[in-house]
Image (cartoon, rainbow, N blue to C red; front, side):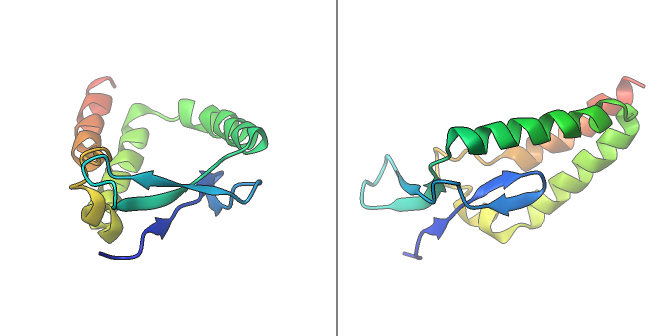
Length: 114
């Protein structure tokens, strides 16, 4: 089994270590000896920073036309399809990383609202 990956917070377009510097193991519920990865134990400051960045990003996102937002979602879906690490963990039942197929449906709905 491969060494479990250490994940970080994704805030304002950047991967960031949690401010407390701590991570916790996520254990596969079907196999307690399988550590899926180490995930950030985020602090209140991490969460506040992420919320602030989301509010700022939402201002420009909400002013985009649906067709333009659809282009970004299509590109995101393509990137998910290409991402090797996501393909490798997609089989894990508690990850449910079928986001790529779900996101591919969004642009159609967004375009239909124009």
